Image 1 (cartoon, rainbow, N blue to C red):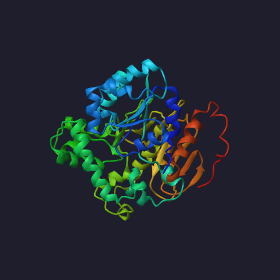
Image 2: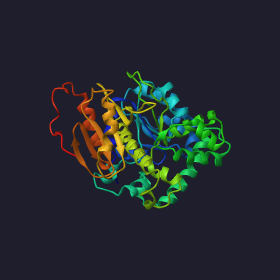
Image 3: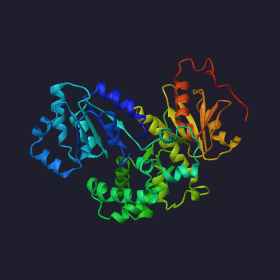
Image 4: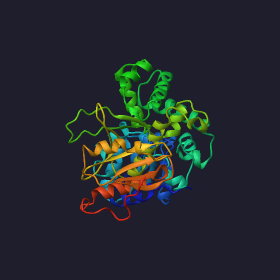
Length: 408
């Protein structure tokens, strides 16, 4: 069984909060994580309709069975439980009493905020990261992008197409019907495919509306469904402190590249070698890896992008304590001067950061001038260096040890 990086943070949070809520997309490994982390805790699966019926008839009697707390799985199925959980944690004042899991952020997350403010920590769990599966081994990029990172694909070796057909059908038939009043599920599935074709791009709701044949209001509602289900991420633009004409629409990313590839109709990994959207899918992979690293540490995203209306654009800005740090993402396996163009342009706007970053589609570990370069298999390492580097109070006095410039 693959050990999850988030386990360390989950244990830590359980020492400080009476309730810890683990949320994330379906099939991201939430149940496995909490059961593996707390093997001695009683486990209750709220997917079971008989258990839900029993709880609704006698909620107090149900909780009397678990004076030492329990793992409550898929708690969004019964959000009225939160008021009872609140009563128990206030009564016993024991940390780590309940571990909750849930697969979406709609009424579920709203109820948590209302009922247990200050009583629960929330940990977001996305599918496996590259390091969790492969460590730093070099895996062909086209295979990586085609497969994606959902745990069951790697644990049980389910054929990729079979897995995603079942995943999409289950998501639409169960979750979409449950969390939103979507009548035309075929139209919604087409909307999913249209969004997949725009992963890694500036979000244009009008264009999506025209292509799908629904109103812009409906597009926003459906995007919110995908976002709350952890299928997509809308990365905001960075426009603080710049008197520029900055694009203010977010960028759209699918959080699992395997799902995006499936929705695009890609049937073989080899099709991704020269696919016209290879660059955008690769960028989506890197953004997802950054988010996994951030979420596994229990932190909020500090990822933005930067784009002026006419010239400078940067794929990612890491918002740190001192300044935004620019990072470029290139799927190419070859390092060349053109990849530094946007980083050099951004240096004319902001000079407060120590090093910029560059992610390439190859196994590389180099520093060129003031840019730290890492391969796609070392994304967390690059993030760690850049954030630590830029938050160091003496950052302008000396270059961090081991990061001497090299020649291209």
